[in-house]
Length: 480
Image (cartoon, rainbow, N blue to C red; front, top):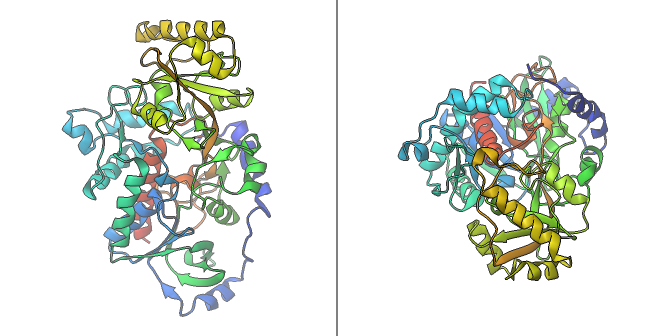
């Protein structure tokens, strides 16, 4: 059973704050609902959300011979999955096989559970460990290419993290194409799921969808809610993740919390609504989001005084909280740390500084402290791996920082909300205590993060979660 912390319970209790934040359709008596559905269009499975989770759910149900309706609130498929850097944490893939990398789903499952420090559902971890590799291999089958990059910090020696060539945008182009070409899948964009209709036995019998303010009933036996988080709903952000209420956001514009509202109205439990996935590397002059790879490989962050103040690679939590306490923040990197630095230079946002004095002049600080922090950082980098740990607790090190240095001003940016409704290992939407709330109702992706990322996130986990839950939800929905 999931270990529910006091902090998470408070977040769950605060769900009462959802009332009025997202417009809810008026509930109708079941007799009226049955009349409404009479003669309505029928699909075996309705999937709401066109990101990786939704597309995989639709593809999987289609392969089982089901007639599927996929609705997406915005004009194109992709969702926040298209904005991702394209890392996927998995094992047993064609990528690993080609490199002779040996790993087991049992070891991957144990790693998932250990990283959650008691907060993650063991049965869900088992499902993810067994399904993430299938997801990656399915992407191979539709033409998604993967790079040769080896992330030995996040992936470890088993190199569980694989990266798509062209990042999330490339993945979603192929997934969107495969869904659109599937004869069993009807895709309707600019169309939102507003309600799930249950019969008196709490069994899915239909949905209501809206396009251009016109509501339409649809008959169905199964629904997969994969509508993403609530990062684009300012009212929800103000209530649940107020610390980041003024932070920039780069998630899909359709992430309005509709799935969270629908599920909780029907009795779903939700956790960790007070937590957001925030990354420190949004460049401030052109608002360009860069990955944290240069930081992972040896870069540092300093404030307006030219001093380090945080562990640069607790990238989705404490790093960003520490950044909010500074007047300005600067990322300092060297050209050889990662190809991302070349992009920074090409865009003109990373300024070349031949010396520490040049760096200090750009930042507007005294050079002595800046030089001391760079030298101390490099000294730690040269230590044996087991001894690398600085006063801020950083243990992730790559190469030393060397002149010429490159500096760009950065600020935190929200990638996704972490809280969501609860699902079990079969992706059935459940109460807080794990009881399915309706037969035929499933969840996948960020809308269903629930407890999973409450204590932290690593590169590749969100995509693995989206793909795994999408596949599982599609399989289970096809059985209804």
